[in-house]
Image (spheres, rainbow over the protein chains, first blue to last red):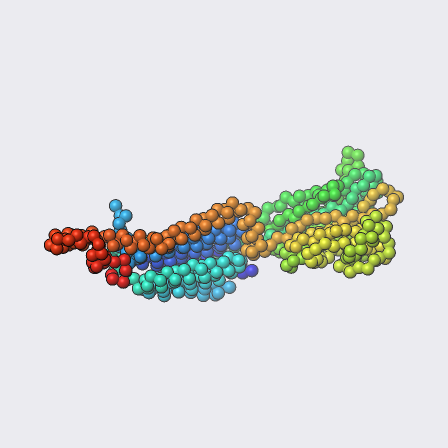
Length: 103
Length: 474
């Protein structure tokens, strides 16, 4: 049982990691890296959930993290299949090239 | 612990930063694995060992392998960020991120540095009260005279009718907590009396337990028989038992319980001896069916071959034993090897935590003494964050979401198969070929006109550049 440092440091770290992920989504043009940044954001949200679950001794937070992980796994599988298909069609996964749906 | 957190979080942030800035996507993926590993370590520090293992297997294992696989399959390691918008977008997003960090991070940081930072909730302490004072028909209990000597934690019984209540008052000595209302009376009248534990925050308390009974329409209450200060730490579990001690005196004892989960494949049986002046042993009498039926009538005095489970438990004390899963024939025997009570076909379920209190049944006055082994359930609470605790919540409270997530995974699986099937590849290829044909059609029509033959029919088309289905021609 390591209770000594409290919840705030974890929330702070979670905030930093979330913002780094958001910056990655905005700045990187490689679709795979955008995807990895989204995973980073999901992970930071999970970290916050686990920290709060520990603070309030509520196991529901852990269950929610479990669901987030499952959904993330499904999302990654479908997303990567889409990326592979896009790459086959266009020989590029630069998201700036994917503008045919832009109005 | 602070330095450990600082080191791990520093590594996590640095790995995330490197992931964002590497041009080679494989390097980015490897740094993301480092970051996920750090997060898994932080889960361990946050009492979530199960989630830490899931994080390692699902994220750093399955998901990142999938990423690396796709990156290497596509040969997309070094896609350069060549967009013209990237520079101003980078500046703006960095500025916004720093702004958000200041807005949200400042209150968190100021909380972190101040002394009144929110401490994580501690696990609760537990206290329960068992009133083992059986009030049989015609049983009389004592009137308490003021000025009696209570140093022996006892109460005399004389002419008082009806059941005796145990009144418990618990006051917090900690100023920050208000006084706690406690379930003060637990009757032992019914056979299925199952007083549960009351959860209490850790701290110091003043416990006062007294007895009350009625005679006619008057209520008699004793002065506190148990009056002591308690230091309850987290995960402590105490049982206050009131039972008939020797010489018709009522005694109260405070016993420490073990609420942790029993070891794998076994149950924990906590025995409380509430019989006056008797050392009680619990023995396993095995599968002797003939003797079993004898003992069920409480008439088998001679002891059968047996295995001692718990030996010589003095009056007013408790003992915890672990039984392997299975069926048992158990018997409570006293020091003269007389069988007091049998538990025939006693089923030990794994993971179960049970309390058995052996008390004397008042029965018919003047009749033969009989005994009861009263059961009090106390399901072992699994440790916070352990696989058991998550499994219990997941498959009891969240069954429907679990099913829905299963369906979601199935749909995702089917979607991936549909997206990745070879047909999709061929369709995409055909679309590209058609695009090229459209470009080269004017040239073909010119050729047809000049040569006078229909170039678009026959196998001429296959000889056109880009007309074949072979991507190697690209």
